[in-house]
Image 1 (cartoon, helix red, strand yellow):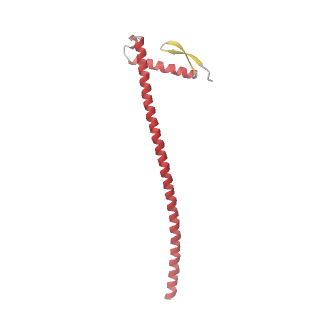
Image 2 (cartoon, rainbow, N blue to C red; image 1 turned 60 degrees about the horizontal axis):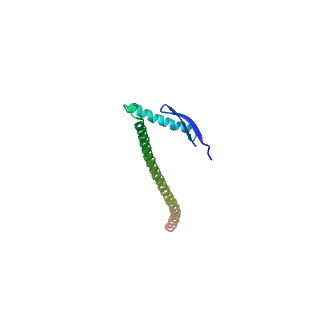
Image 3 (spheres, one colour; image 1 turned 90 degrees about the vertical axis):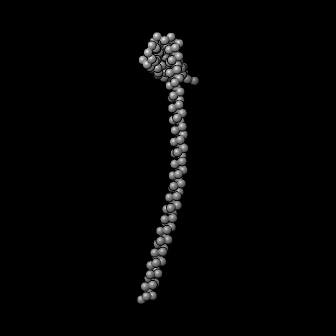
Length: 136
């Protein structure tokens, strides 16, 4: 079983102890993400610091939820693109195999025609030689 990790982090100017089964670096990363979101609100929303604490928390939650849904939508789009790419790749492989079979068939036909052409040229030479003998 994984060991529970604890880390003291600074979020919004206050120290909190976060615990979880992720690494300490990950817990700091989460805290850093929250601080970034808080900074975006502080710098992007005039009068943010004068709002009640529950309103600040709600705005932070809304911003995180918004980013989550946009990220999830992007992931869904990328998964669809990946599925399309894999399908196209499979289709192209099938087409390549079909073309290779056709090419092999054409190569065989060429070899047969070349063999037949050699036979006809040989027959022509024999007929020309026979004709020349008869004419002489």
